[in-house]
Amino acid sequence: MKTKTKNDILLTCGILAAALLIGLLLRLGSDRGVSVTVEAGGVLLGTYSLSEDLEERFDLGDGNYNILRISEGRAEVTEADCRDQICVHHAPVSAAGETIICLPHKLVVTVTGGGK
Amino acid sequence: MKTKRLAFNAVFLLLAMALSYLETLIPLSFGVPGIKAGLPNLVIVFLLYRRDLKTAAAVSLVRVILSGILFGNAFALLYSLAGASLSLTLMALLKRTDLFSVTAVSVTGGVIHNLGQILVAMLILKNANILWYLPALIVGGVAAGLLIGLVSAILIKRVPGKVTE
Image (cartoon, rainbow over all chains, first blue to last red; front, side, top):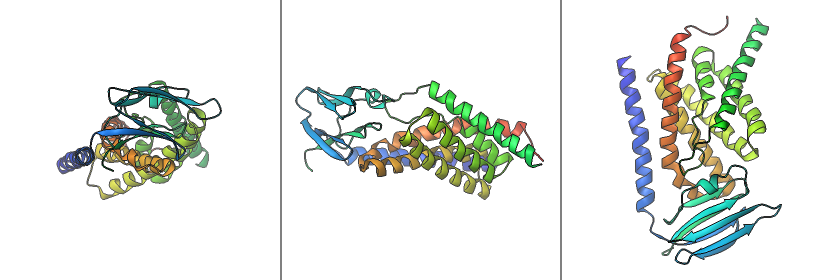
């Protein structure tokens, strides 16, 4: 029983350490975002600079839409008519590689860096 | 005692479905999509320990399909299916080693569940950047697995011996 508890703690700490490591590597391996790309179902809808504030509406057919807003160098989805509203609740993104995904609409907002 | 078995399985399935539904009523938002407590896994972990892998797998499969149709959408169903099957496979393997307690088995299940979902999401969206969610989803999986594991451990202790027969 005792050794099991020890194993449990080791395993859990190992998993958490792995999460931390992956998070660190992702952060370190990316730079500040320069622009955002918007794709729906793998089709590029547009690229927008993070340095200019803007609000853009994407109509995806069947009355589906997502509204993207860029302000203070950060991008967020402010409005969408999707069922789960996950993209709307998502925290604003600004680091290269970060994404906001609207699964029901297959819409992906990706922050891209300057170097690549 | 085929009938008894059938009735028992149905009751467990119903329990898992009810927990599934309960979960849709409690929206959790941590800035990252897909964080859930995984309440139906209570039933699955219990079955894994007090019945057998076969029953746990059957109940899990039917639960995922039914609740996907009732409370979710086609995509959610795919993610759940990948997550649930991977997670149960690993939990069964880990249980067999007899090195860990129920809680750690459940923690692993929670983490693997999220890994499975992220893999399917990457395939469907053809976008590797979803990996950004990985750390948060791993931590979420640990938290959910811990909760489910601790409760399951109590349940398993309170209901000694195999259920039915």
